[in-house]
Length: 168
Image (cartoon, rainbow, N blue to C red; front, top):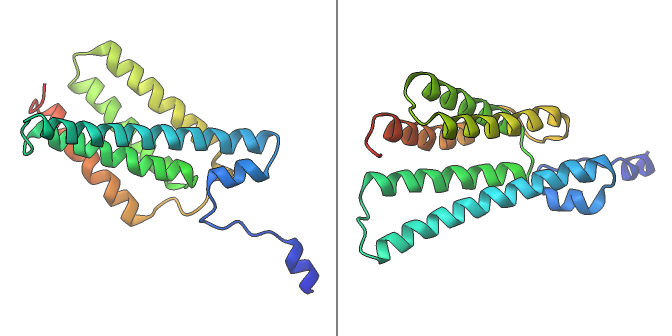
């Protein structure tokens, strides 16, 4: 019985996509590699945005402004997404579905920049499609209340800042 337990590998929720890339081959290596690349990309965008806030404040820009709040929301959103991709979490489906819904809603009722909005909807839909196709390899639960609230709050704040015309 104990030899059987040693041969069964149980996936831990704390294993990163980098570990999975190193220890898998073939199609799974591609899937986890894509999650790793997306995680690094979103973390990089989040860090770049956070550095933009710092540079803006160092150059005499207003620290307490709607633009700074928007940049902070974007940095937070990208950091959460980066974490989700690095650890290939199931809640990414819920998060990207909500982003796609808000982008489509904004495009239908508020937007005037059709080409930019169309591209952003296409990118979000493509990532959501990839997540949906690989959902069997995701870990964790679909609805993690702490993550959903942590993501939805800056998402809605940024949506309202842009949609209500507080930021041009």
